[in-house]
Length: 157
Image (cartoon, rainbow, N blue to C red; front, side):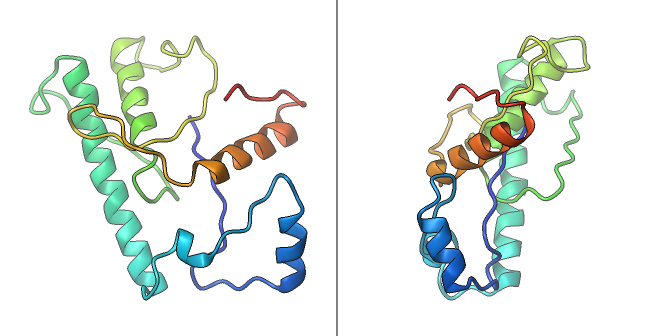
């Protein structure tokens, strides 16, 4: 399971030719920096905030998955390793991955019939799925990745 979005770092700069080129490229999007990064936060503050949101999201994903499976968090141990993921948007896919491991043969893939899938969305500990932030950019990233690496196979969105 993969969640992919590529954005300029909070302290990064973009040159005018890049902006103009991206503006006319249907596979890229140009948005104001404040639409992605809150104004007034340093790079370090943004990184800490995103890390905390991801930690909270993982905790919620574990709770939601175990609840769905009728298991107590006290009787199950779940460890997630998600390098380079920040924010809450991977929570839903984490919960589905946990359910897939618990409910299937413990190797994963049973829930998806062995297919590799991508998705995004936050999830609360009670299993409520939240809104997806930046969906337009995420859909573009999935299409771009699929067209580059999947032999022209286009994802179903």
